[in-house]
Length: 111
Image 1 (cartoon, helix red, strand yellow):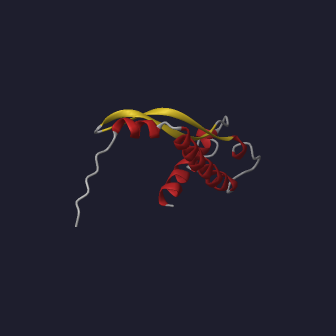
Image 2 (cartoon, helix red, strand yellow):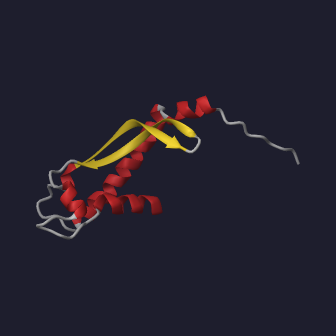
Image 3 (cartoon, one colour):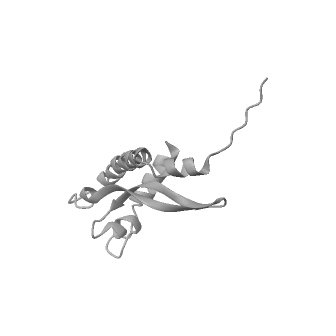
């Protein structure tokens, strides 16, 4: 049996990590998360204001690992509703935290 040896090309991998194709893949993952989050938000929606404020976008962010750091494309799911933090963690008016974004991240990780 022949032996195969893989020699990683760090510069090439870093180029792929910030490529348009990687950004598109990360945006697709964020959009999948948006669908999941909107589903979780439907469980307690009264006005729809929170559920209507999910946004997805990409950004180049630093990634730090034990091997060093480099930039990567990231897909980001955010909610810019004025009461997004209250929905996520609860507040004086509604003490029940709904953990929409936390549950979304867990659902995407499990799937």
